[in-house]
Length: 373
Image 1: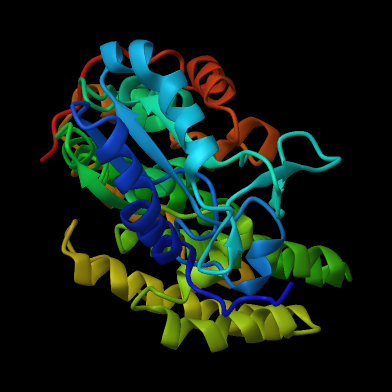
Image 2: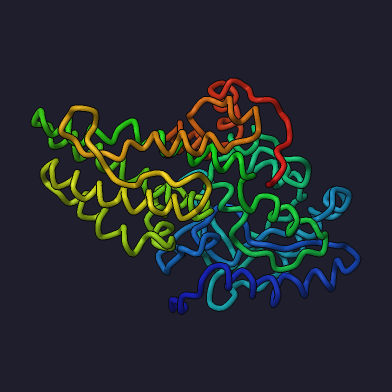
């Protein structure tokens, strides 16, 4: 089979809906109101897919959302209809997805029989709850914001809505577009706190001859600075595979990328520290440009009496925390959301685990709604 020319997955899914799926719905389910979108997991949802993505879990796929009553009455029939009547391929890509030896992973393959398609027919509330752990069409609580990994929020607010006959997807996505102001301030403060806790270790490790340890700390600080820039730019950070690609879209990337790259490439701690201090000052200046707090001196300085140049990033934590008006958020521990205190894919991929971890770690904040400011 000739490999088709690559088409970005969101465009492929949009055309698949308009040219293949929608006509069948109009013909056989014309009285049923629906919405259609491509949301959730997948590199194409974030706009990072390439031809390589087509080797698994990529292709002509989307969600069809129905109301609760219509799901009960019509999901099985619509799913079967699409299986029987969808074309075997679309724009050169098979519409049939076959299982692989890995659980939950399917790939596009040609078939002579009914297609095992990736058009998910689902209820809006159930889909949101399964993917996020809560339904954003109702009140979003402080616990919801803190327990939901940024990757999952990115997967819901990115992607594309092709049709919103139910009138619910646009409103739900708008509510999730970004954190309420006080939650945002808290997460920024906690990210600065992470940096403050390790910035002196680059030199301390190097001073005792542990250049490997110094390099590891440097890599951690580079990652935290990239995440901070994304938070400053009001972008939900994705998981590690796409962190660099997402960071490249921030306004700070042109100035910071060569500096951070040089810090990672350095073979001695003094050179690492030199590049990191330049990066700190760029990010600190960005903080001041946001106007979220009174200006904070962006210059680096010695770490107490030790000969290590640092930013003393906790100063930014203090300034941001002082601007939080919600009393509940002001009293939260300075550990942030689940991404900021857990680094396990097997936890962050499962909403029930992230919610349990957040309840246990952040001491069960009240389930009060947080208004957007």
